[in-house]
Length: 266
Image 1 (spheres, one colour):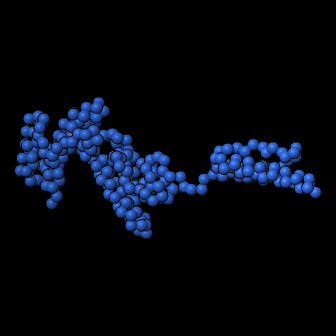
Image 2 (cartoon, one colour; image 1 turned 135 degrees about the vertical axis):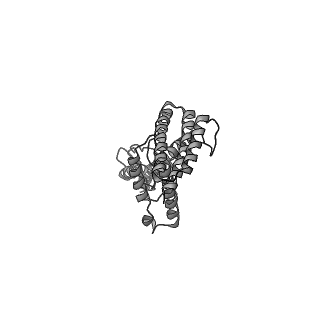
Image 3 (cartoon, one colour; image 1 turned 90 degrees about the horizontal axis):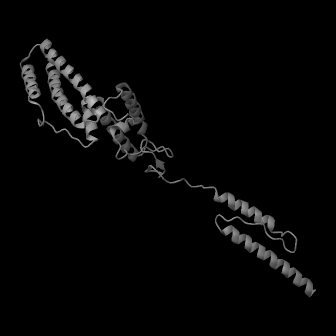
């Protein structure tokens, strides 16, 4: 009887040692549990349990239940998921995103950074953006989303109006290179050009008939078209100083055209 008790004790002790080895293996991340040695040449009754637990642990290590946080781009203000700099809405929670810092008007409207652009394509992209940012779409959204949509819409309007005009587009393109055309400056302007502008202004001031005023407007428009072509060539050659001078002249002619429009209005 005593001997039989010792045999049962040895079997129980062996089974407990096997169980401890299984538990220790499962607690090690990435560890793969080896086959459990049989006890006394026979398969341990705990071996199937250890194998099942090992498979479950392996599966759980390859499965995540939480939302991945931002690892690139910028984080969404609402859910912290990654949002690309060109995306208006978070791909995870669909919340509108604030304007991206460092993004220029060309990028905002998905246009190539160039002095010459496809105006019809620009208008189409502008309409698509404004449709996405329409106030009716955000009427039932949170206060923060409404505020962000207003900022985005205002920025899109400003970008569109800047890129639509060749003059403002060229000046903005220069600003991206750190060059600013000062208001009302005459530095570097050649004397013949300044004299021509002065004479055009004086002539326009004295004109009274619509035909004469329109003639001045047509003349100045032709000069602007010629300057636009020269500005394009300057940008293509990388001649920023030349582009700056030509755009400054365009500003003078643009002011004359504004006076023409005012005099044409009855």
